[in-house]
Length: 82
Ligand SMILES: [Zn+2]
Image (tube, rainbow, N blue to C red):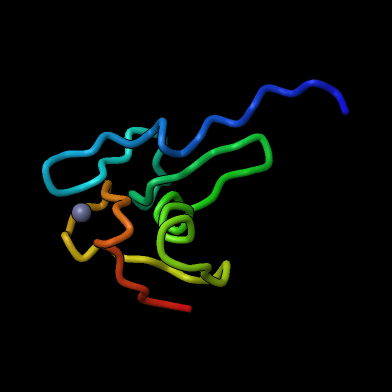
């Protein structure tokens, strides 16, 4: 396989505040944190939730209970649509 640049881990875009995990990467026009890789972009909240809580269908939408659009902390997410 050709040498490719390793994808940047989503953790590299997170700054943990006292209560939340603040996303410092790109955002979609609707304010949703986006994790962009060479294979496309994913919802950063879903990526972190799947990593720490459980797998989600690709249609799942998460909403931060803490009220911060930039927060990707898995414990703060509520599944609003599956
Ligand atoms: Zn939060």
